[in-house]
Length: 185
Image (cartoon, rainbow, N blue to C red; front, side, top):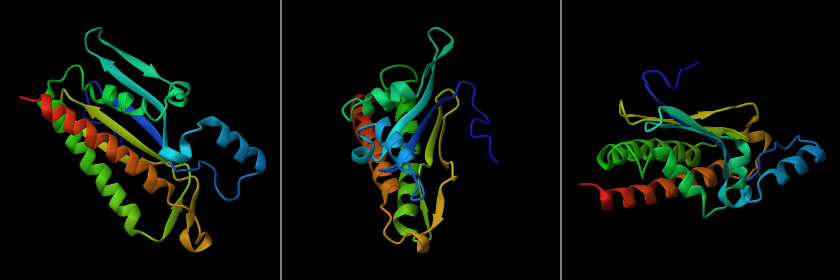
């Protein structure tokens, strides 16, 4: 077990549920229906925001966003939620924000490369956890929640939903890096 927030003073944290589907092959029809009803863009984006907390230095408190907020985000809005997590339009300064974005983007790229290259396991309903703290320069990305993991041999025709989600997240981070770099000193 790892304390992903270790060393952080005021961590911003977000949990993104990965996959074009969030139910495993053994799920009951009721479970499938329930999961399909949660977020209509899951298959398109391959991810959804399930929760986030952002430290607001101006008020000295956290702002929290629950799963219902995440479910309300359209594909056009999800980038704004990620931008808020990184404080793209607020503190820290653009140079520090750019460093956090680049650090997180590199870690997402590493996870994406791993998923694309591995053929041993299929994951359903796993999550990516982002932990950021601009005050100490921490950007951490971790794959979490392996309750629905299967050997690939058991599911040779399974989709690559985690790849879709990580590709979406990587694209959002790349866009934010470009926008932030354009405004950085």
